[in-house]
Length: 351
Image (cartoon, rainbow, N blue to C red; front, side, top):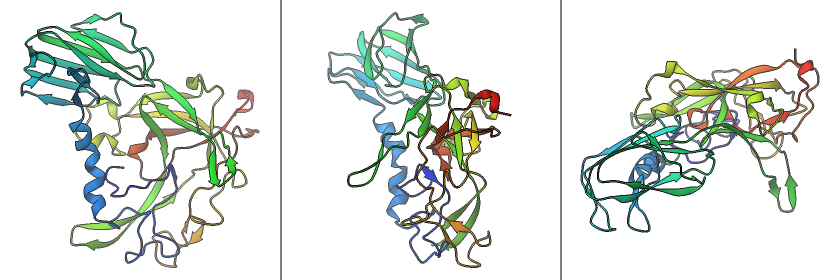
């Protein structure tokens, strides 16, 4: 997450500790906990937000205006285009993207007509553009910059980017030279967002540095070995459904929407619980399971580990009870499972 202070993340992360057995060693390396291993990360990692802001509105290759990122912003300073003598008095962008499909652009004080380009994401099918309430009958191609004629004066433009749940299968792993492991595991997306199972954890805090910050160690608790029931990759709605959270309240500013308690939506997926023979923790090499030093963690005899290699999907369903699990935006998780084994289940066997 933006607040993690670290760059490296695992798509399947079971806990956040230092290297075991010194799982909460403040004097040692904290590469996998949430802390201050390298102070530069405190400044660098959060630069995502200002970098997005700086590049939201740009000049196109033809010298006209291009909107490349979608979030709330407002400019009441005159914008002068290189192509011709066009001046734009003010520009307002209103949206709850990436959690909303609708982007509204308001332009005022436009001196002369010009071409506005808007980014159409590659995943988006059936995008629509409304200009002052009228739908444009344009052929809008995913993965392109789409040009729209803007007249002089004031214009309100609406961009609709339909978002559907989609399944993307992971390409093969190459753990060593000449070795290919094809797990056929699945990632779950809606629009631009990767969704993940947020794992429960117990949080331990280390010593405070410079009277400001402390290392935080997350000890994973609860189940994580889930196999998603996916009957048809092209029709995820058979086994999953999209759902709003938090009563549809307006999103907070900044990175607030990516706080676990504030994230505004989720995907409810059907799954079965796998056993250790099917999907285990790592048992050898880097990240292999080890018990933390006695008395060093709030959970006695805590075992820290990485998730092992996923089994090849689809895995047998057998006569197992299905459960519903909640998937939220990856950026709203601290420890998580975001790459899943999948199974094809005969629904008559699901009790």
